[in-house]
Length: 248
Image (cartoon, rainbow, N blue to C red; front, side):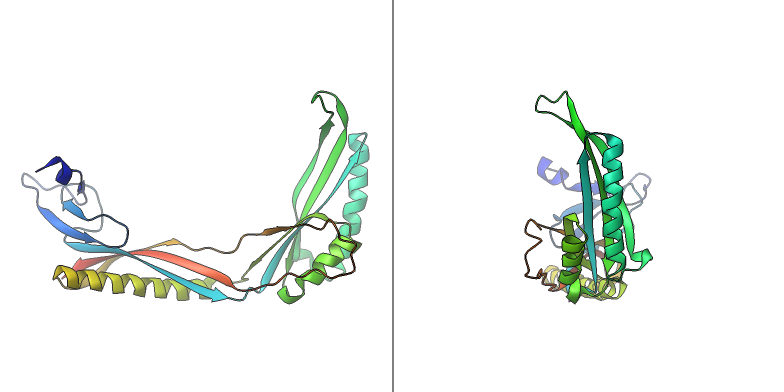
C-alpha cells in the first residue's frame, strides 16, 4: 500500500483478532473519501457507509428585541462617582419601567467602578462608574420609540440592540428536518454514482444553529427630534447536520 493510500486509512470499529477487514466508505460534502479499517474505536459506523452533511435555513420575523443600555459617571472620588451613577441609573430605570417594561424583562448585565489615569498612566485623575442594563422588548416594531425614550429622556448611552425569537424550537425543528432531507438527497446521489443502494440511517448529528448578533448604535445626536429607525427584517435560523447512512 502506498504512503498516499495509507494516509486515508483510519480506525473506526472494534478490534478484530488476527485479520483486519478493510471496507470502502463513500464520504459526502466536504469530507474526503476514506478507506476504513475495521480495527479499533467505538464509532457507530461498522460497515460500508455513506457519510454526508445537509444544510437548511428557515427565515422568521423576530418577535423579541434585546436592548442594551448603560449610564456612566466620572467624578474626583470613587464615592462621588458611585453616588452620581446611582442617581443617573435611578432615572433611567424609572423611565424604562414607565414604557412599560416588566421587572422580569429588565436586568443588570454589568457594574464597574475604577480609577481614571492621567496621560502618563500613573497618576489617578478621577474615578469612573458604569452600569449596563438589558431590556427585553416584545413589540419589535416599536423598538425605535423605546430607544428614543431611554436615550433622550432616560439619559442612557452605550446602546446596542439585537433581535431574536422568544421560542426558537419550532423554527429549529423545521430547519433540522430540511437539513436532514438535504443530507439524504446528497447521499442518494452519491450512492447512485457509486453504484450502490442506500440503507438505513446509522447516526444523525446536529452541528449548528445561529441567530443575529446585537448591533451597536450611535446616539451622539440623541436630542434630535427625528425618531430612531430600526428596521427589523427577518432572522435566519441555520442548521447543519451530519447523517451517516449504511450501504444496503
